[in-house]
Image (cartoon, rainbow, N blue to C red):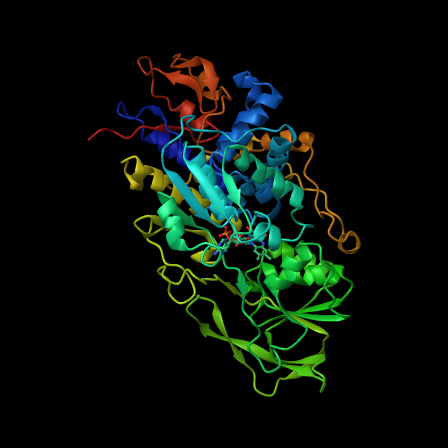
Length: 561
Ligand SMILES: Cc1cc2nc3c(=O)[nH]c(=O)nc-3n(C[C@H](O)[C@H](O)[C@H](O)COP(=O)(O)OP(=O)(O)OC[C@H]3O[C@@H](n4cnc5c(N)ncnc54)[C@H](O)[C@@H]3O)c2cc1C
């Protein structure tokens, strides 16, 4: 059955059900984008601030600043994530039922760049300083998100990082052609401007002990990530010209020219493998990626895989190295590769790759980059609860009474998850320090509103905006130059208009116009979601207002028991 006829049936059913006990009620619902990801904040809310600015009396710049602030409540890195997030928020957008999902990630990037350009400060929650001094280990997105959330609540915060610069894998992993370092610098600076102190070149566990930090700080957050790439566990895999993905990318991202020779083999299927392959391609090498499962199982962001292929990277699936061939002097000459097939699912839920006997073949190679996986470095931190590789925390991110942990150190993921975990840990610690209930300090999410509850015909069909991008060969020629441009202001303002505002009133006035009993009264100073008050004294229970409400905000009240 089509969406349209489902909706008509639902409206008819609604009317059938109208008895004196069934009357319209305004109920804000959860938007599907919000369920996809809790890291873009109230997506419908920030889009609405701009889309509804004419109704709420905000200027364009005011509305954009308010929208940026709403994102920044939960995520201090909108320009960064607007560039690299795989944007799960878009996958359930109800707009897909009409044409294409909203370009939420591109809009987030636009607002992030706007916040940098007009120098918007991050929003504080409290100006008075609290007496507790909080320590953070790791200036990656997780540690910085935690530091930001504590600092804006008035705590004094110091972040220690082993590296020369802050940013974690966003600086030392993700290459500049996807995330220019100036963008990251600008967003980190906003956190520093809140008063967060950065102590760089300081490795906790060796330069300073965990015990010293514990005695200095009221509480600690550990966002130490997973810094150590695993080597290649095959004969010849520990000799010269074999890099781990993390070492190779860290050097590239610090501007070093890494000599790879003409033929590079990258092993792995995650973001590190794809980034390493694309960097080696930019260095002029012929690059082949070997991945032991099929493309469906590749953990890398799908469009990054496509970009790598477009840039000339060869992808050999269901194949794994079995040995690295070397001359007598140790010089690499090639890699022996074995074909694989997929067996039963393993503990990760993905089908286990099994070697196919007699399927070996040889690939010539000068360099191998093993981007297989990364694990935390626990030197001097062995006393912390861990399962061999990963730190182990409870549901509030606590590893012990005064220590919280989050991000890749607990399980490898994406930057958005690391930021969410940092925020949740800060909310939970703040609740504990102030005697509040830590269970209340997280994102409540009820089931999202379905497309059947939206009047799809209320909007004209039109495609989403797309960032303009260089083509494959141009991208390689541009080296570390950024491959995609931020959408223009005009595109941004057009895109916000595509939002259905699922489950929240956007002041379309349909209910007001159709109600002949005058039940709806305009609110004098409306805000997104709040345009009409409802008085049912004269309600004739015709159900028309519910039928014409395009965003599913009005529904028929259930009879009281
Ligand atoms: C190559 C690559 C590409 C990626 N691409 C994407 C992408 O496109 N989109 C996406 O969303 N995610 C991507 N990710 C994943 C993302 O970068 C990580 O999930 C995220 O950075 C994890 O954040 P974190 O703060 O937990 O750890 P990290 O970013 O690793 O930061 C940890 C910090 O802790 C510091 N540290 C560690 N140990 C100590 C110590 N003992 N003392 C002091 N400091 C210490 C480190 O120096 C580092 O700065 C990518 C990762 C890599 C490696």
